[in-house]
Image 1 (cartoon, rainbow, N blue to C red):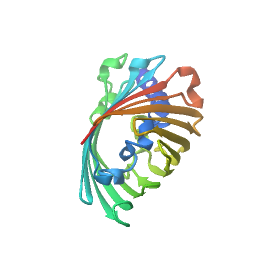
Image 2: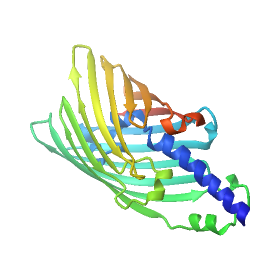
Image 3: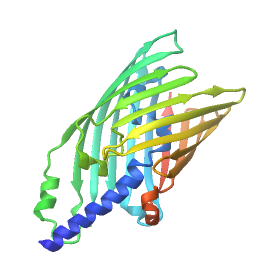
Image 4: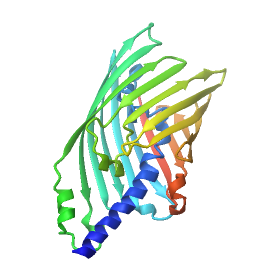
Length: 286
């Protein structure tokens, strides 16, 4: 039994390091721009957005097969309303998280069609499990069985946003029924706020962003970055995070299809593990 328990604790420790360093502290770069609904449900269907998003996040470097996130999300904006539904899986070592979510946002016009106050919420159904095939020892260990037999959980997100042609302000409280152990595989910040200012020139747009994230493990992280767009054909992103790492990305558009590619370096506490993250995203909008 002791050998099995040590194996379980080892898996837990590895999951902690991988989940905290990549999934939480280095979010998907497009979350600050095109996919901002990942942090704030109030951005669902804003400006009548109708889109299907598919995102894959994976690490590069050592142990690159031990973590992967997959997102599939659809949103539909109509009138003052926005609705969305999504599916997410996250694997960190032997830990697996599956999430189904549904979202709704109401967009209140403040000045014609250029300024909105948006309020949104989402409900999530989550299931956490341990893959016993990745454990060295007896897969029938009571600690593992207890974890896997934990019933499905439900959680909520609430969001508020102000959107205009030049300014976007977001405030969200996520995982309202938070359980602290969930930060291993749950990358959504508990509290998120951000301010983005859009500077528009002839063929170039510059959008600096300042954001704050409070994670489920009570860590506070500030993000400073900017996006530079060229004639609405492609954009580049660059961020510095106070978790002492950087992230960068590029996006391009061909007719109704958007392609995003992002990269995040490792955080200061785990530089030796080699857990750089690579994001690949595809959007179809109509």
